[in-house]
Amino acid sequence: MMRWVLVSFTSSIVFGTIALPEAFADSARWTDTQKPNCQVWALDPAPDVSTTWSGICAGGKATGNGSLLWTYHGPDGQKRTSSYTGSLRNGRMHGRGISALADGDLYDGDGVDGERSGHGIYTYPNGDRYDGGWLNDEKSGHGIYTKPDGASYDGDWVGGEKNGRGTMVFSNGDRYEGEWANNRQNGRGIYVWTNGDRYDGEWANDDQNGRGTYVFADGFRYEGEWVAGNRQGLGRITFPDGKYYEGTFVDDQAYGIGECRGADGRIGTCEFVNGEFSGWQ
Image 1 (cartoon, one colour):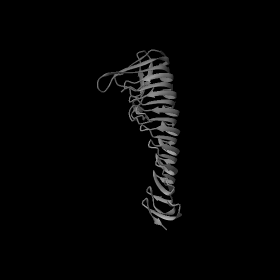
Image 2 (cartoon, one colour; image 1 turned 90 degrees about the vertical axis):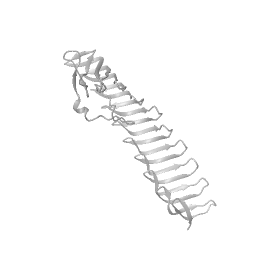
Image 3 (tube, helix red, strand yellow; image 1 turned 180 degrees about the vertical axis):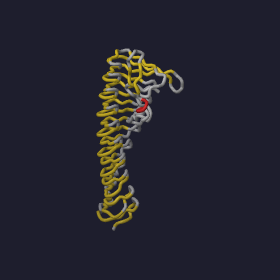
Image 4 (cartoon, one colour; image 1 turned 45 degrees about the horizontal axis):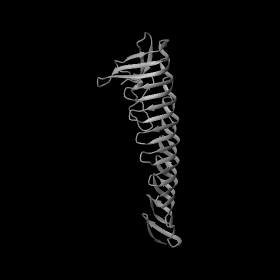
C-alpha cells in the first residue's frame, strides 16, 4: 500500500491512537514524479508507483501549491490511487493541504516538513474522526475524537494519547470528566453511569484508586479508600434509611469492627463480616 507525503497510518489503529509500523522507517525514500528532476518524499511506496505533480519544482524537489497523485497496484492486483492537494516545501507537505488515501483515510489540515502539525481533521475508514491539534504527526493540544457508535472524547492530548483533562462519553451513555494519563483515567475525576450511580474521586489506570465517594442510584453512599476499583481500607457506607458502618473494607466488602448507627438511631461498636452485619460489640 502506498504511503505518502502526509502519512496516514491505518494499521494498529485504536481509539485515540495511530501507530506507525517500524518497517516504514526502512522503506521511506524519495520518489520521482513525471517531471524531470522533481521528487517527493514517500513512506512505503509501492514498487510500481507512478507519481504526478501539478505544481512547480525547485532544487530537484516539488514545491509550492499543487496536486499530487499516486497510482499503483495493491496486493490484490487492483489499481489504486492516493492524492494530496495543497502546499509542499522541498518535496514534503508544508502548509495547508488535503490528503486522501485509497483505503479511505482523509486528512484536511496543516503540515510542517511532511508531518501533521497545527490544526487538522482526520477521518478514518471506519468512521472515526479527530478534529484538533497536531504536533510532529501526533495528536497534541486540544482535540475532539468521535466514533460512529456515539463515543467521544473532548480534551487534551499529548504524544497522540489522551493526557491532561478531558471528557469521555462512552457508547452506552456513561460519562467521565477529569484527568487522563496515557489514554487512561488517572488522577481526579467524576464518572456518571447511565443507571444514575456516580463516583467522584481519584483514579489510576481506569479504576477507582485512592480516596473517593460513590453514590448509588438507590441511595447507598460510600466514602473512603479504593484500590484497583474495589473498596479497600478505611471507609464509611451510609444506607438509605440513615444506618451507617464506618470501619474497614476488604475486597469491596465491609469487614471488621467499626462504628455503626442502627435503624433505631443507636450508635456504637459493631462488626461486619463479608459485607453482612454480624452484631453489636
